[in-house]
Image (spheres, rainbow, N blue to C red):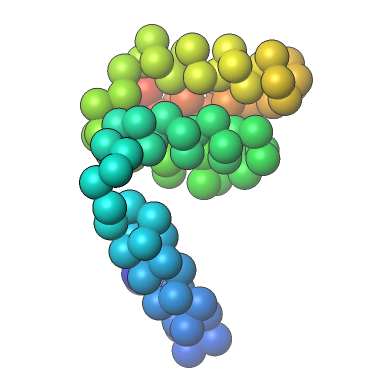
Length: 99
């Protein structure tokens, strides 16, 4: 749960923690690396760049390589447009430099 949760946001944070980390990531049908790659694709397609940055870091921790991130961004560019791919490259570059 986020340390920034307060009385107003805590119920939502608790529900999302249980849903995402319990139900979403809690099974072993899809391995963590593949799940991370799927998340990058979907979140990139939605243009939710703050979340994309967080999941980009997580993907690296789950074994996703720089080349795989690049390939994911290429697919985002094909299906979601060049401007969105450029935004993903900007964020990925920042994450990769920090890693």
